[in-house]
Length: 168
Image (cartoon, rainbow, N blue to C red; front, side):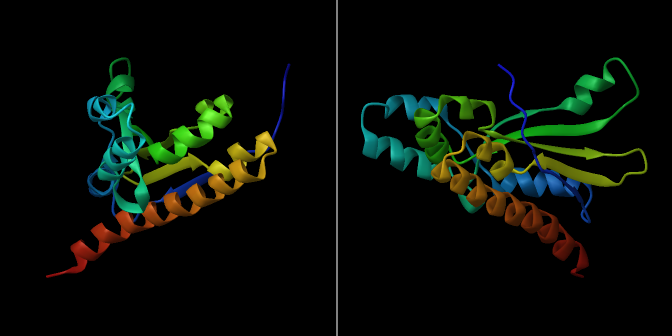
């Protein structure tokens, strides 16, 4: 079976630059701590408390980072790029348990890279456009919520560094 659907791709030119943005982005995100979740796994209240303790700005946590630049540089010219896996673990586990195919899209993928001219960008697929393919209003609404969270988080991390740079 093959399904086609429209996905909205977002590309943001960063004012703060690659290094400053990635540092601010990583600092703003909480960290997923699987051993802590495993310890609490049969106590729903303990799991929820552990997850909330792992959340950063906008309730988002870092699931992992792939250093794509390092990988690509092994066989070609040096590149600067990281792919982040981010999301709200509690919300992701709730919606994925109801629709396992959402595991293709959650956690969300965010690419930050630098071009040869040192211009930095962040790119991602709009979660609502990915989630809408399931035709479930609750899932689509969750994606819309994530759209706003990502937009605000990216703007905050880019702006945070820009404000720091402007101060004497």
